[in-house]
Image (cartoon, rainbow, N blue to C red; front, side, top):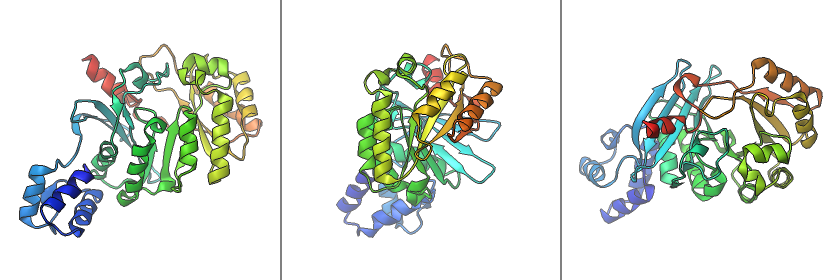
Length: 329
């Protein structure tokens, strides 16, 4: 919902200021429509229904995985594609993965979003409306900005959305903002008071290999990016999570694990190894045996590493896949 439009509409109608708080509280609790807001006068509900769209996004497609993952393809008012995902876990986590841009300008070679034409930054309303869609389906308690786009290139809107997420049940400590290595954004995040987590999509232990698969490395080298992450740690005293997608024969060998461990301070970094979700790229995912061996090598070198649970492979849940498939169709 465009909350600024809601505010100005209420003001123009001469409504008391608390009406805004009432309307937003209903949204944050998962109200389905204006009519559900029973403590707003009926004539006001009718006016809002006419003048304030309940969401800035339109659902174009929804896919449900056999593991319970739900992926939604939205479009904005100007027909830009946007994806978001809800992942449910046995331990009670209901985590949403949000997009910050339509498409992405940074063209990582293994990413379906990177193969799309970049559209634009999303507004804070378009970001929070992704979360509100899933809130209407039930409780949510974790959030990751790992969907379409580079959050650090649209950090103002991302942070505006983060300020609203606690009202939906997602604390900032349970919110992670991922970056492919946009160093100025990491420094900007470090200056914020909200305790969001930082995740770095590294995916290679040296500049030569990283530049082959991630063009952003030619702008901000591994040394520059890790220096920014270290500054973030000094400011926030929170570990950075290293995201490392496992690509068969590319970045998953023993020597890569040893080199990766040598880069990182175990007190400041923890590694998430990510099984590759095929996305029509030239890469194949590493075998489970290769992932396990990589993890054991990292731990032998003194660096904590976990293997991320794979979710939604049967519904094209990798970032950008639903949108790419829809555009291709």
